[in-house]
Length: 430
Image (cartoon, rainbow, N blue to C red; front, top):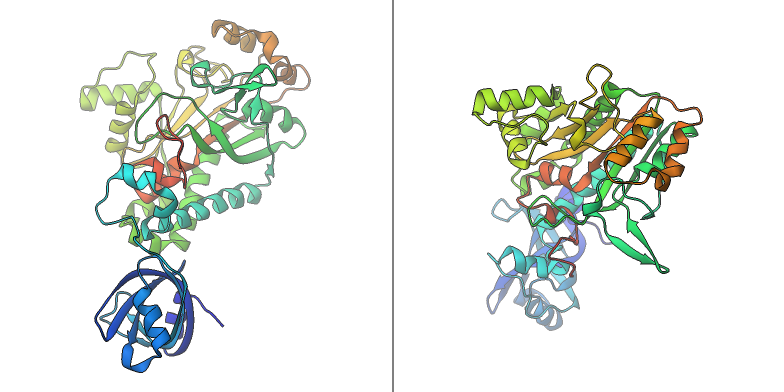
C-alpha cells in the first residue's frame, strides 16, 4: 500500500511504498540519487545499480525532473539527507517520463507566469496553494460558527455597484449587462429573510492597473448582516482575519517556513487588537508625523495607506471616510453628514486594503439623491430601493479580497502568486 512521504518519515524505518514526482536527480554510472516529491514533503531516494534489476536501473536513469514514479524501499534516518530521511530503493517503476523540463533556476517572473500550469508544481506555489485552501476553509468555518447562511448572488448584473469605470460589460442576448463587482445589491434583500449571510465568489474589476496588488478577477469574501451597527461590522472583520491567521498558524507552519515568512508578525495580528482611527485622525497623523499633507475629502492613496501601515506595524481600521469618496449605499454619520460609516482595513507591511465595509444607509431619499449625484438613475435600482420601503432595519456588511489576505499572510511580492491562474490587465493566459 502506498503512503505519503510525510507518513513514511513518521514511520521512520522499515519498508515503504511511495509514489510521486522527481524533484531533483543526480548520480553516476553506479549510483542514482532521486529526491521524490509528493503533496506532503520531499525525500531522498538512493538507487544502487548493483542491488537492483536491470529494468529498475534503466527506469532510474530515465527519471528526470518531474517524471512520475513508484518505488519500494527501506527508509532510515539520515541527517545528511535534505529532510533527514533516506530511502534505499529496492524496486522502482517509471510511470510518466519527463524530458527537458522547461523551468530552471532564476527565471523571470513573466516567464514563470507564462508557465504557471507547470510552475504550480514548485514547492513555493504548492505552499501558497495549501495556505490558500486553509484560508478559504477558515472563512467558511468562521461565518458558519457565527450563525451565517451561505448565499449566492448573480454574476451577470444589470447595474453597477462600485463604480462605472471598473465595469466589465458583457453582451447578454443583445443587451449590455455587467460582471459582478460585488454581491451587495443582491445580498441586502436576503438579510430580511436570512438575517446573516456570507459568500465566497469571484468578482470582476476592470481597473487599468498594472500594480502588484490588482487582479481583474479575484475571490471576494462578503458578508451582510441585519440588526448590525458600524462597530459590529468592524468587529466581524477583525475576528475573521484573526481566525484565518490562527488556522494558518495551526496548519501551515511548514509552508510558512518554505516561504520564509516571519510568523511573529502573524502571531501579533492573531493576538493583539487591531488599531482603529477615523479618516480625519489618519490624515492628521500623516501630516504631523510624516509631513504628508492631504486635503480633507481626498481618498487615501496607496502611498498613504502604506505609510500608515509602516507607522503602526499592525492592521489599522480607518473609519468615517468623506461621503464624496465612498459608495452611495454607505450610511451618513448622524453627527456629521459629510462622512459615512464606511471603513477600510489596512494591512501591515504595505499590503494595502484587505477589507472594505460599512453600515448601510437606511434613508430611502438619501440613497436616491446619492444615485442622482453619481449620475445614476434611481429607476435602475428599483429592486434595491424596495428593500428600504418594507420593513428596513439597521444593517451592514463588508467585502474582503481573499487574494490580498493570502498575499499578506504569505508575504508575497506580487498578488498574482496568490491565485493559481491570475487575470490582470495584461494577462489572460494560460
